[in-house]
Length: 79
Length: 230
Image (tube, rainbow over all chains, first blue to last red; front, side, top):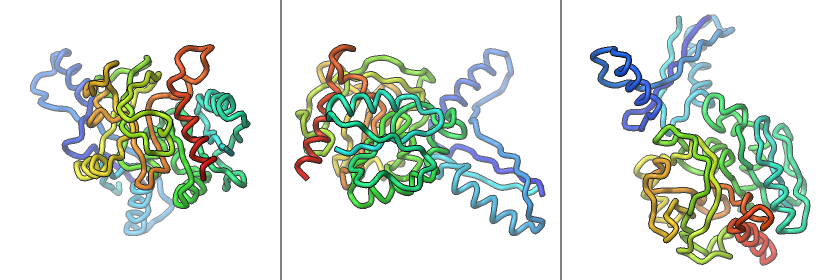
């Protein structure tokens, strides 16, 4: 089973990388970009065939390693 | 002093640290590989050195923080054992839950490699007893992610319990809030029991007069004095 874990910075956490990308987009003339926040996407292949079990595993992976709950949120998508 | 210096793939300051420990204490530190399940018997100081463990992949210190040796370090710290965590070591200690908060990318996106001043906030800790509170020391920094962040409640608690050990400052002790974006100019913090210190600057690089200032030496002398008094 294929899945994605998406990790994003919590609102209010300063994201200097996102700010730099935002500035670069503006200088490239990409109009209308109001703000950019950088996150991470993990593409995961799982042995589990059962959706609920897969979600439990991904949650475990996200909370144990893939995200730092002090500054980040995560969500899981089964593809 | 029986020091154990942890070694992870990608760490590069472990030799500087071992050299400084030897220079000040006269005793050889044990180098401990990250897959070891236990610390050497009788270890009374664990040092997590600086560098780029696992190439800073995922988040700085995140992968090293989950290494087998870290369970032993947590046990050591829970029993009140001393832990000194410098630079990448500070990031690892935060990721491992030994210290609260997290070190984010420097606010100006720059890797800061220079000598800075920091103000010693208190002198009644195992790491700072040979300094005077309020004194300003010179130490090198070399980091891209030293911007200390925690939620408002954690910051209030750290400040309320006087657990900020060092702050970035000017040469005359004026706090510098703009150095790397770090909340309240925090350069180093202590655990609740004051037995774990995490700091971004490198006191181990200012120990030997052959290479320059020796303002970092007192930190190691403090540790020796603490362990001898125990």
